[in-house]
Image (cartoon, rainbow over all chains, first blue to last red; front, side):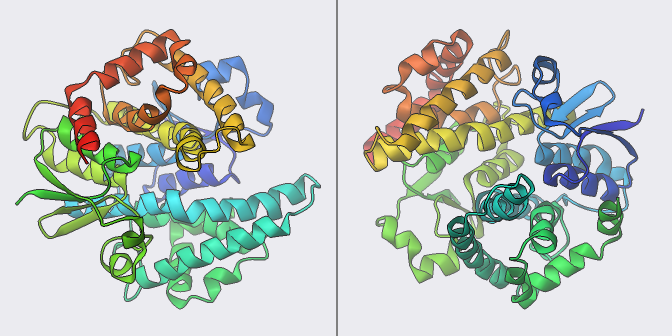
Amino acid sequence: MVIKLIGYAQSLPTRRVILTLNELGLSYELEAVTEIHTIKTDDFLANKHAFGKIPVLCDGDFKINESRAICRYLVSKYQKDAKIVLIPDDINKVSLIEQYISYELSYFDPPLTKILLQEVFNKRRGEPIDEAIVKQAREEIEKVLDVYEKILVGKDYLNGEYSLADLFHFPCAHYVCTDTQQGDIFDTRPNVKRWLDNLRNRDAYKKTYAE
Amino acid sequence: MTIKVIGFARSTNTLRVISCLNELGIPYQLEPPADFAAIKKDDYLANKHPFGKIPVLYDGDYKISESRAICRYLVSKYQGKYNNTILIPHDVHEAGLVDQFIFYESFYYEPVVAKIIIHEIVLKTPESEIAKRALKDLDKVLGVYDKLLEGKEYLNGEFSLADLFHYPCAHFIYSSHADLWDKRPNVKKWLNRLRNRDAWKASLEKKNKL
């Protein structure tokens, strides 16, 4: 039975799941959500996502939501049949990957999301960009990226070898590069730039972003 | 070699780890830093946590930070070793759902409760607009949780790491906003089960001693 993904291909959390599906070589059907009101209906809240969010993944009768939980589930279930290791077996390595996943949630995504909200989403809605918020978010992410620049010294990926932690970071970072005025924050840090370039040159990423 | 946790027993993030250690029956030592300034010093940033945060856990030479990552590590390594408590089930589907509820805690629950804690307890500005709005948001979130808990004792049926993660934050604001929690029968019963767990009571003793 084919995996079904309910989401919006250009949304960051949906991209995270599509990247994982592509890395694992899994086929899936995308049930595109194009209008936000469809995910706020009583039926969606009762049966798909209690907080009215996408993506939601259906694997046969099994249903799961929250992009990072979905990705971890896909790896747990399907990695053994795939040609790639996104989460290794070694407990110590796995746990450092979980640590980097927590860094992504806590320190990396929030300021980038603030920038995206202003320069992409507000702009799309015809609302003014609050430059003070962009400035503050930029200062915040610059300090975070200084830490990442040190973490990535002598390494191509956060934990040495490519893992789910690197994948999780990519959608937000890439969107800031392609669709905002703040992409230089990555380019001016050679280790961070190399890391993101390594990621965007992976076949799964080229496939995901071609769609 | 005993596990060492660097953190403050009164911090919600450290309490998350202490609860997990207690639930799994793992012995540990808590080493509080001198004060909050100590975790922003160059030595701490270089050797313990590059973002200047607590808790940090040492298991022999192995070091890991970020409370939820630490707890997952403890479960991976020690679940079943000291007692029979299961915090992350073995079945891949059940584990996936526990994970899903952990992200509900991270995105929809904790940020709202954290704002209330910061404004009411840390900044002592309970009348601020941010605190008032956060309380309204929490009311809505708990409405969702009441439905999620319908016919269940815990979020995924049986007690798991997801339930554990929710309690430390709740503890700090429950007494000043009991009505918000208690008006929802499923949430009220759930919270009562969590606060009556032996592991939580042991964690609270630690907090109150230090």
